[in-house]
Length: 329
Image (tube, rainbow, N blue to C red; front, side, top):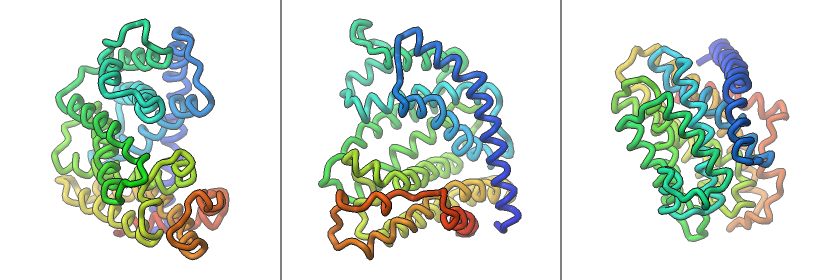
């Protein structure tokens, strides 16, 4: 990928984002707001951003449309509606697991709508309403059901990342399984016959996406008491190596798919534009290796050393540089 191609893909993202924001405003927000009003659920600012903006935008633009690049097509309107509903309920369901700490049996009862009405919270009712809206326009397939089960199972297992004794290998395995199967869940709601090799690159993209997120959310994860590869790696140099190896594997998985080379390269380049932000964050975090004694007391690391500020032009320019680098791995 060269600078002109990077400009083309960047403008493409701008158009996708604008189009999806318009869709969220016109289609999704009225339905989410109506459900919240009906069940007296008042999301706080952070929750509202997740269910009304971040996940419906991210899953559409960064995940599913990038998966379909290898097919040389975009999401249909029906697929876009399905993805909107699943983005909302999946976010709410993650909160039941990660923040409210419901047990596996209770989680199953919530999902299967078997929980007694008297025990249902307003948030649960909104989740159920969004799942009903999805089911009204989508008949679950075996691929969907299997991906859903695995995604939920591994999301529950990910609670282990709150334990200080967790190893780096365990962190990476959980991240791979949890996010890989979540990515397959998004892919499963599309009217597409994915091959096993295509499923593999979609699965791998989930891991890379989580590594990007962990690098950017380093401070938040520490404040929440979580352990990611950023905190468990022996150094930021090792964290960078882990990230680059995951990106390299993703590119290799894409290139093994049975599709025209042009479509495969387009997929790699589009994903590189997003994953470059992760490498920028890791580059910023590398200063920690020199600034703090080992073993690092993460509670004492300055906020400025953990947060990558993309308002700085040096970080924006690094994103350009690293997008080109990752596309060529």
